[in-house]
Image 1: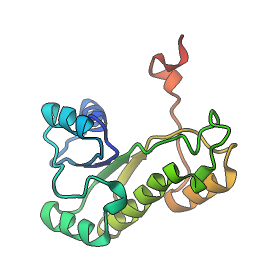
Image 2 (image 1 turned 120 degrees about the horizontal axis):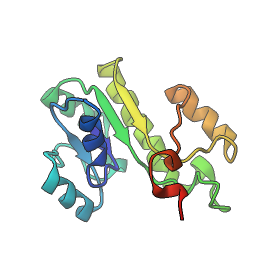
Image 3 (image 1 turned 90 degrees about the horizontal axis):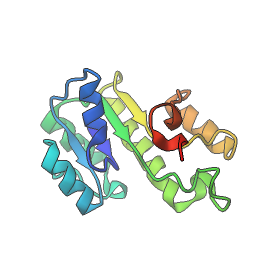
Image 4 (image 1 turned 45 degrees about the horizontal axis):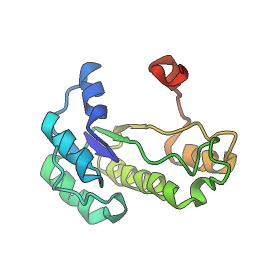
Amino acid sequence: MLTLCGGIGTFALCYEKAGGRIKAHIGCEIDPMARAIAETHHNIDHVTLPQDLTQITATDIQELVARYGAIDVMAWSTPCQGLSRANREGQGMADSRSALFEQAVYVYKLLRAHNPQIKFIAENVDFRTKHPTDYAWACEQLGQAEYSDAREMSAAGYG
C-alpha cells in the first residue's frame, strides 16, 4: 500500500480493519509530526520516497516497484481548500493547494503502468458543482467517483 499525504496512518488502519492485508506500507507525508505518529503505531516506510509529494518522479516509482514489487493499493488525502464549496476564493485545480491532487493522479498513473489492476481511494471534498470542469478532468483521469459522506460515518454532521 502506498499512501500520499497519509497523515498519521489511518488509511492503512481502516484498510486492515476492513479485512485488507498489507504486505508493505510505503508513505509520503511532509508533516514530520504526522510521520512520527504514524511510525509509532504502524510499520511504514517513510524513506523510499521523497516525503514532499511534489518531488516524486518516475524514477522514484521505478525504484519503489523494484524494491517492493507492483503496488496493489494507493490512497491519498490531499488538501481540499482549493476545491471546497466552503472556500469562496477556491480556484479548483488552478489553486496551488490542488496541485497535490494532480501530483497524486500522476503518481497513480505511474503505478498503474506497473499494475493495471491497482486500486485507489482519493479522499477529498465533492467538487462536482463548484468546479465541474475540474471534476470532469478528475473523472477522465480516474473514472467516475463513488462518494461517502462524512456525516454518515463520523461526527462531522453533528454540532
